[in-house]
Amino acid sequence: MAEKSEVMLEVKNLTKYFFANSGLFGGSQAIVKAVDNVSFRINRGETLGLVGESGCGKTTAGRTIIRLYEPTAGSIFFEGEDITRKKMKPIRKRMQMIFQDPYASLNPRMTVSDIVGEPLDIHGLAKGNERRERIFQLLSMVGLSREQANRYPHEFSGGQRQRIGIARALAVQPELIICDEPISALDVSIQAQIVNMLEDLQKELGLTYLFIAHDLSMVKHISDNVGVMYLGKLIELAGRDELYERPLHPYTKALLSAVPVADPKVSRSKSRIILEGDVPSPINPPSGCRFRTRCAYAMPKCAEIEPELKEVAPGHLCACHLEE
Ligand SMILES: Nc1ncnc2c1ncn2[C@@H]1O[C@H](COP(=O)(O)OP(=O)(O)O)[C@@H](O)[C@H]1O
Ligand code: SF4
Ligand SMILES: [Mg+2]
Image (cartoon, rainbow, N blue to C red; front, side, top):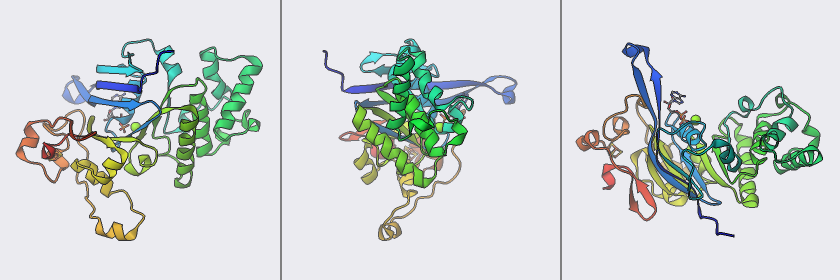
């Protein structure tokens, strides 16, 4: 058997624009630059955490990678194969997505058994007794019992519903799972349980994750590498420890200073950087560096020249004129 490629997912210059009809400009089209020229790789069995404030393009990136949206430009490689324009059905068997709101993504009129069994039917993976046993096995993998199989989503708690969503994603035995804020809607006490379960499943099944969150504290534990997005751009990317210990981009520093620190001594000595102003619109992003309207270090050059994402230390990429 040929050796499996080490890089599981690679996106190159991934771009997704939405063309929205805007009444403002006499019916002309406004271009929403939701994801703009984003590149990264994820190795097999590893997790890339993707972080940034709401609206920066994380969900759009995830949905474009799994081809729920057609990319505007750029390419997506899966195990070395260019899947940018390939048929979706075979891709879905290898790549799955779990969502922030498990309730909205589960059909309220279907039993858990039918929800988890549906992908088995779509892909013709199991029938009859085998199908039933497989469903029970999937439920047990996510900590649910076979007695729960005939119940409906509304009978479960938020954490349990997320478990159902994960069982459904696992049904096709995917290699990569895009986890789109899977814990953001859950109680803090439940968040760790779900993350720990995802980590255990990753080890057991050799899964690769793209783990999306709006907050750096949520991805710290699970990620091997972390990427930070701002207004459709990837602005910093590094190994997990490197990023948390030596953040370089002013935006990453601001995000990190907002993360609560358990040790009060550290907390007091750490100055908080407050992000001022709102995130600008991706319809008309600032010229040059998109972060410049909120950056305390902005200089004239920042309005004129867009900083490129460059390797500034081994394995540490940053897009800021201060690091050039
Ligand atoms: N289907 C769509 N049509 C038009 N604009 C969209 C659509 N989906 C998302 N957007 C816009 O794209 C930007 C990025 O959104 P999204 O990817 O959902 O961000 P995030 O997941 O980081 O919160 C936002 O400005 C959002 O309003
Ligand atoms: S390029 Fe300029 S505006 Fe952008 S983050 Fe760096 S210093 Fe701030
Ligand atoms: Mg989102």
